[in-house]
Amino acid sequence: MKAMKITELRRVSRNTCPLSRVDAPVPVPRNDEVLIHVSACGVCHTELDEIEGRTPPPSLPVIPGHQVVGTVIDAGEDASLFTTGDRVGAAWIYSSCGECTYCASGEDNLCPEFLATGRDRDGGYAEYMLAREGYIYPIPAAFSDAEAAPLLCAGAIGLRSLRLAGLSDGGALGLTGFGASGHLVLKTALHLYPQSHVYVFARSTAEREFAESLGAIWTGDTEAAPPVHLNAIIDTTPVWKPVVEALKNLAPGGRLVINAIRKEDGDKDYLLKLDYARDLWMEKEIKSVA
Ligand SMILES: [Zn+2]
Ligand SMILES: [Zn+2]
Image (cartoon, rainbow, N blue to C red; front, side, top):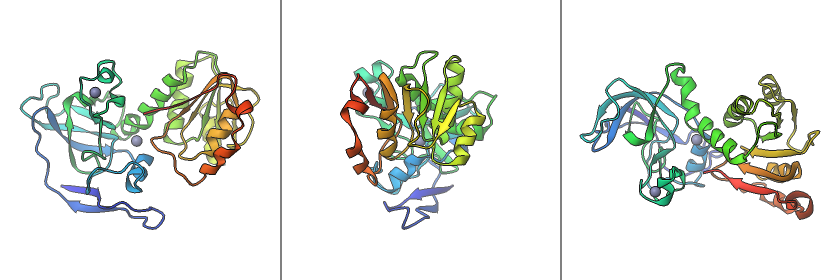
């Protein structure tokens, strides 16, 4: 099968073609694994974090890709949940232990034995991939392959962020950064919380116009001040400036949810601008999303 592999860790700014196209054997499903014929695979910023070593694969080469839609074509001897021809999606969680307190409470994303699709095991930048049957999802017919793929990471972590934001209907929600996850969160938030208004902070005019077209009540640059203080803000950027700027705009008791697997260090000194009385006091909170 044709596949794209990460063969070494490197800065993408120095090598803009970090993946190698290879011919690899089609994997054989064992135990509870299914073999998926891949139709579509989304592209995620986390793949840059893998390639540049911020969350490195434990061994190389590895096939990245964790927003995968495809068709089940074979299964191991213990797999029984899906049949040949089923359309399924595979996401970032490749597997977890299934037994710890986190797994028992449905928080398998926090399991100490968590394995990631496309980092700890081969992912979807290939014609075929293996997945554990308990960690894949049937895809409703309403979505095309390409529409469904980004929901498996950008959409899923966006929904998780929204839940962790603790917003109530009518609360003011901010989004800082407006890419794949942000625009899905905006649509989800307006659906779940119809009385709420969404305020979007984004650097580019195109992103701000896109946010307005999807229903944002206000948009501005990362440093802009919205007309009201916000009850929750979700940060989908890989940098630090939006964190400090967002804390300024939180209402008392407000929560900042950082939706990023890793932050980059380029502007880390921006954290020195943090002013405790203005930015953190009054029971403001910061929470990350795994
Ligand atoms: Zn992702
Ligand atoms: Zn576990």
